Image 1: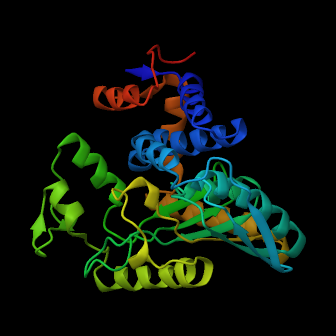
Image 2: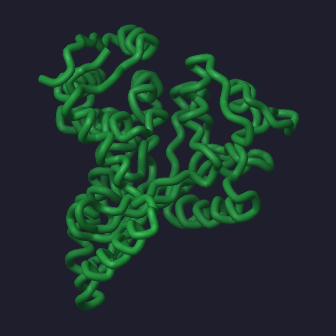
Length: 332
């Protein structure tokens, strides 16, 4: 069933408002969830509503957080999120960081005590749209082999460019755990090379993969990148390391509150020429047939906004149980 984006956003936002979030915060959660859904990152999209709902209802997330921004240095700040849903804290952080970056030329902001932030592209993308170059790092519950000890620990870049920003958002594992969770819900197999079972053997069973571990991309290089992110997002920006973060299917009152580190740079602070050099890079990549990161997201988003968001029957049923009633009809 295809549902017009505005109708779907109203339904999701209303759901979180009923759960106790302020209306603007409910809108932000809906916006980040749906951004993931329509840009093809469905593991962080509508399938996450049930998780966030149970965490709010059980007290694992705070629907009415009293967030506090601590400016520790002129270009450094810590957002104490008071158990806020991740998108609420993340978008607050984007607004604060953008202002700091315009003042200082570059700035860094750590988010502590917030829930799962969803796609990091939502945050670096908004900074890129404000003509800032941005990086994001987050640690996550343990997932990748060996162990698991370290999480999938995503890393993201947003950079101003024409005709759309360059957006890179990648987990350190071969695939994000959200995709395996989505496959598990559907009962679908996963490709070989994604995961190991709890005995350390390769598996195509999504449920066995969730009980086991995911493979890092590039083997040892991916594992090293996971350590890099853990240092930045866990040890530096956060207050909980990956091994101590509760898994997504743990009791909802134990909602994980990972670290999130955001950095932004004002290209103008580095002198003239950024825009022309970025354009030169894009032209060079296009000339050899290279894919420009962010182009696919843009195309998928525009298609969904024009034609509506496709919601399968299983997801319709899951959302219906949460009280979110959907009506088809494509664009509105």
